[in-house]
Image 1: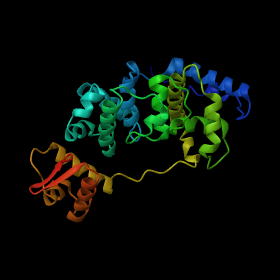
Image 2 (image 1 turned 90 degrees about the vertical axis):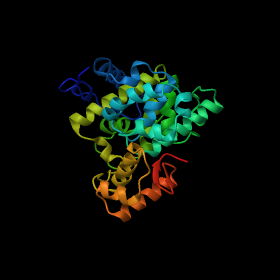
Image 3 (image 1 turned 45 degrees about the vertical axis):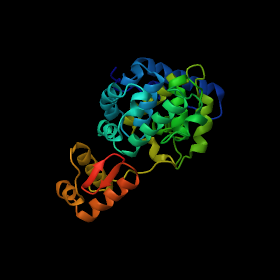
Image 4 (image 1 turned 60 degrees about the horizontal axis):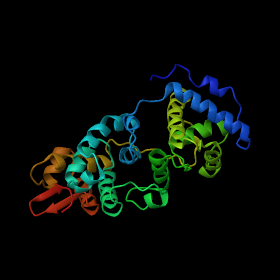
Length: 291
């Protein structure tokens, strides 16, 4: 459902305190009221099985929602279960991961699926302490997976949640730490429906950024993303993309020529990709996937 032109006004009329229980309750009620009207229709929300939640949360770690919304449906059609994902060749997984960036996440996702299929009978664990042991899953991601997949009342922060708390509770503050925000996350959590609550906070935070700018710039956790154009990330991503698309091994020289980067940078990228298990060096050249 599309957002209203100025949906923030009704919630901005309240002055909030980080220590008042009544304020936290009113804040929660306002956010949820806004969400009931303006919630985003996202593909992983339509059938939020634990598997689909897990895939979406890993994809969303470092990729914008609009991009994930495009690539999530074909990915889960191709790999509809932990078993299918675990058994797929790495090169196939990386091919379907293409466009999501940070390809190590695709490799870690396959490794996590292998562990879940082998050690947990194909069932996603619900305990964050078990989830965090999976490849590519940090504490915040483990908590979010548990909340969305099983409605576990976990406490965590991510960029849009930070934006909401900083905007409403730390209007004049700079370098706001997560230590300041976590008590708010605990106090305002809707423990009866934590998955819905976090969806509401994330959707509201996205719209708040659009209307008011990005409050997370005042977070101590905020890091400015380096430009992608001309970066080593671009060299790595381009080389891997061409290897995935190729039916034959390719040399560093050939990859440098087609990628438009010098041979030294291309070779450095290939060495990194080999070390990370995303690419294999053969006598004939480089191929995508592990040996």
